[in-house]
Image 1 (tube, rainbow, N blue to C red):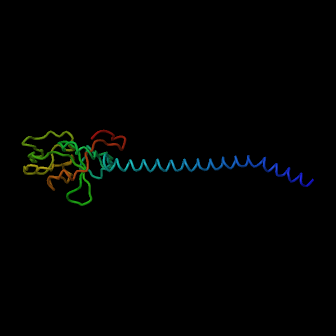
Image 2: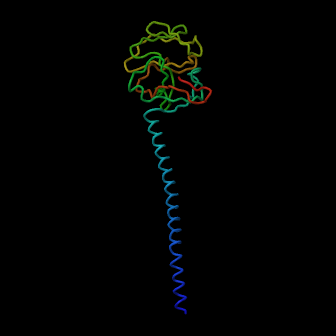
Image 3: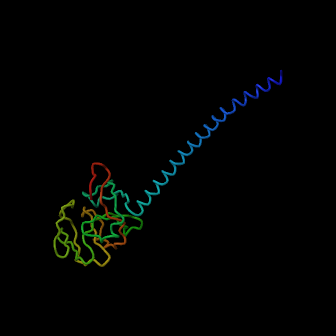
Length: 201
């Protein structure tokens, strides 16, 4: 009799065993599935970060305006995007708004407008900018008449002459001379923040 009971108990264990095995497999599969999702999210986040870093390093870079020298075009606190590759395909031209390494303060970036390029003769007289002897019409200036004089010079090869749009409150090429094109980090092309200032530069 006891032998029969032992066989019945063993049979029950054998019957129960496949169900438990299925549950165990399900739990293991669920665990692997959860870890798979976590790993996938981590990989996607890492890839997105790497792409963002590459874009910033080689294509487009955000820049926050910390100066008032480009008012009213750029207000303090505006956030802009600069194109880092454009000057691999063309030279800087008059009117470009550029971000560049300061020739005066190491580690400081400045934003100004290119007003004359290599070979141009540039001067400031009686509140007007002259390029190649012609007074420039600059509707973007904060104040049309600005102080200061600058004797005519010819911009050397590989350099540009830069000035702020807020001429009466701008440290620019009038004080430190033309800058080397190699100092330019990129050309500003859009204001993306705040939303109220959104638009092209």
